[in-house]
Structure formats: structure tokens, C-alpha cells
Length: 452
Image (cartoon, rainbow, N blue to C red):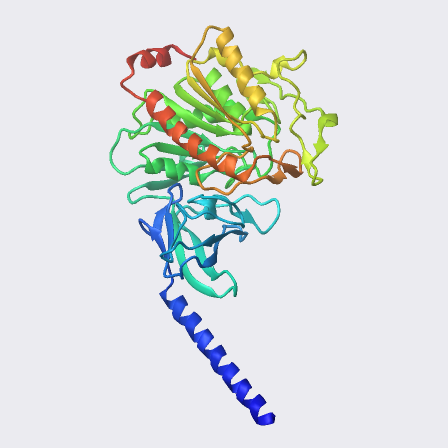
């Protein structure tokens, strides 16, 4: 009996070794391919394929990246190989994980932060963002293959020029496309959180646009906290600086804004000259947070109604209705008089924006222009999208710390709808600036020289 038991144990070990050897052999044949290349720009898609699997074998695909703050973002998809042993995310549906169905870039846009309420941070655009892709055996969890996608921000020849003391008060980074130009010029003003967005600016420079990513606090030697008021003359200096760059074709420039910077952009377009195109993403049509000063003019900030703050089902602050209707009695003094402007406007609003009612604000801005006989605007609404509409494939941020509130709040949106909105808006923004920053448009040129 002992001899038979020993024989069975030896046979079992042999079969186990053969099984492990077989798995290792299979794993050596499995490979991940990122097409057309493992290197691409952040706003570009990659075609993910896995070859060398058994017919109809189930595997788990995982993606992982670490942002500049050290926060880990992950996504996963459970997929089955076809009859030839291949997984192709352009046609292989995810059966479970971070997303379901056929989503060629699902491993990227469906990423979520391991640390709750985190927004992906990328400060250094000189360095690529590395996304690790892993293929694991669906039953055993064994690692079968890996590949890394290098997602870059600056194409060869783009110049990144930090602005310092010699530019006076202006702080930020100027991005110049390769070549002599002239190119369209855009002032990129980011959110209330301070600092700048070099990601958006560098990717636009890749498309042949001169971009000044402008800081207005919380950057270098600027005040670290929100100032008591914003000075529009500072932004006027930045516009003048950008228009004087020899690579900028003129006569006017564009402004790209999001969130709080949306009302700053509308104020610039209303009171300052030389602005041909203003893109306002989930912004307000009234001045918010702190007063705005311009020479002898003061526009007060609209006062939030604290009683309108609620809690989401998960217990997070929901401030969507904290800002009252700007067009009601007592609030109209904060509304920005955009009818003064000769700029073209693009208003983009997310229908599930929980930061504030950006759809109402966009509609009111358009109605104000129409009331004054103007049709110099377009409005686009995005169902089920949240507040932070960023560049394509940027992970959705459903909640996070709000600088003005001082607490974590809900920002809204569903990941897939938010991703689709970002894709569409990125295309629209580029088309908008190219169309309305055409220096050969003589009618527009005449309006610019008589505005302000």
C-alpha cells in the first residue's frame, strides 16, 4: 500500500511538472501587440492585440499607470480569444471588469484611481506616461505576457518655454509648434485648483497651435491660495504678450477655458480686445468665487446658497445647485456682459455636471447673445458626462477635493459617456480654433480692430 501511494505521488508530481511546463511554454508564445507602435501621443488610440492563446481561452487584461503624484490608476477586462487564439480589443468584447462590450481603448479611459477622489496629475510633459499592459490566465491568474505603452505629450521640435521675471507679471509656459509659422495662438487658462495644464497645451502645440498655458495663482512665486480678487489687467498683459509672438498669425487669439476659468474667459472676451474665439467648457456665465477687477470696474462674485448643498447617495457633498440662477433679481450684477464681445463662442456643457449647473449657464449665455441680435456662438451638450472634460483617454474623475469648498465634492458623470464626450470635444475645440483664428478672414479682422 505504501509503495502504491508513493507511486501515485510520483505520478502526480510528474503530471504537475508537465502541466507547469506546458503553461510556461504557452506563456512564452503569448505576446501583446500595441499597434501601430508601443509609442504614441497621449491623445492617440492604440490597437491592443494578444496573440498565441488557445482557441477561446479566457484571459484577463490589466492596465496600470502611476501619475506624477504617485497615485496608481488601473483598469481590467475579462475577454475570450477567438478560434485562432487571438484577442483583438477592436472586436473582442469585455465580459467583465472595468467595462463591458467592445471598447478598443477601454483599458485606458476606464482606469480608476486606487486612492479615492483622485484626479490624474501630469505636471512634467517632458516625460512620457507609461501604461503597463498585462495578460493573465483566466483560471490560474498566471502572468502570460506584458507590454508597455509609452504615451508622449510633445512631438519632436515643439519648444517649451517657461515664463519668468523678464516677462513681467506673466507666469506660465509657452508652447511653440515646430517650424516658423505663423500659427493660431491660444491662451489656455485652467481650473481653480491653481497651476496650469501643460497636458492640454502641449498636445495642442503638436497640432500646430501656439499655446500659452497661463497661471493665475498657485504657481511659482504667485500666491498659493485663491486671491481676494482677480485682476483682469493681468490677463490683458498675457493676451498682449501672446499676440506679439512672431509665430502667432493674428490678428486675434483664442481662449481655452474650463470650470472657474470659463467666467474669466468670458470676461476677457467682453472687456479686452484681440480675442477672436473663446471656448468655455463647463463654465459659468456669471463671475464666481471672488470679485473681478478691471481698472475702475468691479464685477462681484455670485453668492452661493449654502442651503442648496446636498449629499450624494455615497455621502459626498453635492454642490450642483449651490450657485443660484444668475439671471434672477439680485444676481444680475455678476452676469458677464458678453454681448460686448466680437469673439466667436463655443459653449460646451455636461448634463451630469455636479460642480454647478453648467447647462443652464451655457443656455443663458447663448440666450443673452441672441437677445442682442448675435449668432456668434455654438452650444454643445453632453449627456451623462461630468465636470472635468479633459483631453481624450484621460481617466474620468467622478469626485475630488474642491479648492473653493475645502472638501471633497461630486463632479458627476459616467465613465463611458464622459470618455465619448472628451473625444468629441477635443475634435470640436481644434476645429473651432482653426476656423475662427484664420488670419485671412478680413471681416473678422475688421471687427477685431474696432472691438474693446
